[in-house]
Image (cartoon, rainbow, N blue to C red; front, side):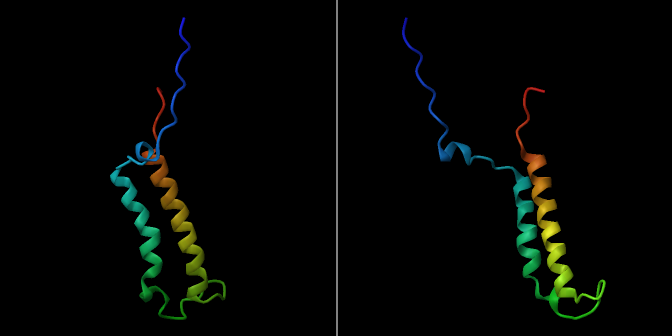
Length: 80
C-alpha cells in the first residue's frame, strides 16, 4: 500500500485568478478622495466641523462599505 502524496499548497498565480468585474468597484474609494472639488470650500459645516474633516470620515465609510460589498459579491460559496 503506497502512502498518499501530500497536497501542494496553491501557488500565488492560481490564487490570483479572480477576474470578477465586481473588483472594479474597489477603484471608487481610491478615486473619489482624489477629486479636489470635494475639498474646495469650508461650508457646509456638520456639527461645527468644516467639510474637509467630515468628508474624511465619509471616505472611510465609503471604503469599508465598498470593500464589504465587493467581498460579499465575489466570495466563493460552499456546496450550499
